[in-house]
Length: 157
Image (cartoon, rainbow, N blue to C red; front, side, top):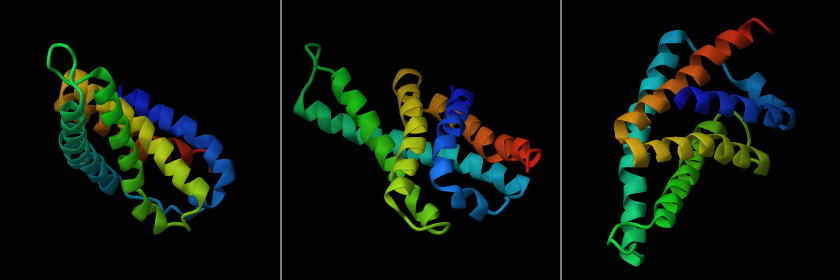
């Protein structure tokens, strides 16, 4: 699922690159070891913060508002929690983006959409398979995004 998330993010990002070409030219190349460490950080730290803490908090809040007939959180509440956490995940990437370019409407939408794709996939995995699955998927997606895509792109530039 992480590989699929990484590929989806790359493909969905292509149309945004036409609207914000300066993002591609402003991003400095990152060494392999830094990209690898960033992948570990994303996989572990972001999943603990976003899925374990934030999704769980939102599920708990929705659970306090409405339970299913068996006394468990509703599916709607779980999906709402995953989506809200995915939006926060996207917004959480804006400070780093602001270091590269001005935060315009399209830049903010890009951050929320691209990170939201991963956030929803990782949130679903957290719900259905557990935190470890979300961590491994996030790490795998980051390997696609931070190591494989730049490596492949270097052959075309």
